[in-house]
Amino acid sequence: MELDFSWPVLWNGLVWPLIRLTFFISVGLFVGNLIESLHWTRYAAKLAEPLARRARLKDVSAASFSMAFFSGVTANTMLSEAHDKGTISDRELIFSNLFNSLPTYFLHLPTIFFIAAPFIGSAAAVYVGLTAFAAVLRTGAITLAGHYMLPPLPEGCLPCRLDEAEKKRDTSSAFKKTWKRFKKRLPKVIYLTAPIYTLFFILKQLGMFGWLQGLMAGNVGFFSFLPPEALGIVAFHMAAEFTAGLAAAGALIADSGLTEAQVVLALMLGNVLSSPMRAFRHQFPYYAGIFKPRMAMKLIVCNQVLRAVSIAVVGSVYALFA
Image (cartoon, rainbow, N blue to C red):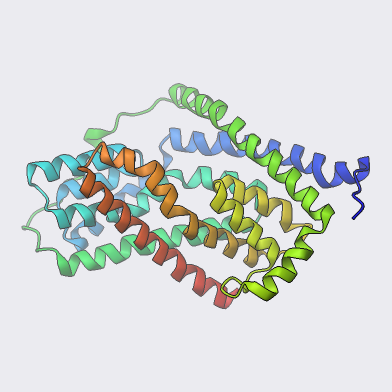
């Protein structure tokens, strides 16, 4: 097949999209990191007390929930220390760690959204909204399970230790932290985006997706609800990381005529399939440094199972009505 690498084709199909995307990613990364650095998500921590009461979780779990909006390491360290002292049991530790699904997700939600938006436009709001709702479901499920599976709490108020643990961050230090993280992360995003965009541009020129369409029709049954282009998003999501899946989606969403629903479902499928191994590779060393290795493994497995089930449920409901 003859490839067309003329300047108009390269400019419209590759160069200009990359320039535009790099600009919006730069703005998005900076804004997202600034929101995190300023701790603007702290207001959501007011949910801790009523939810912890309903889940029959102790005050340390409520404080951990609050701290998880700002620092997962701090939140887990609080739980580990309480567990080592015998303040909370094994079951309470697992429930408390799973209970933190919501703040753990919201901690990075601004950055996730501002990275996704330049790649997939309005589909970013749908994807982030659905995955956020899945996090809400996880915390809700643990709240309900804790209410029936944990012993009743003694009478009294659940103290919130957020004010004791948090020091006010001034704007100047927040900007410095944002700029430092921005300079570190942006090159990694660009190094992924440019090669993937270029690869998909060449694959389209070679007619690769037409070939994949025929192959999928004859051999792929389980994922047949997605077009072959969408399977490319899933593959990159699994092979590399979230940004790679977004880059693939951004390269395909316009030229290949994928619908918003197909892009969102492909990203959610890639999310479910790629998370377990990535979590073990990146989370286990960190968890094993806070909890005992056996408990660390148990927490990771429980988190991944609950996460996969919640995203699968939300994605299935979305697929039915999309």
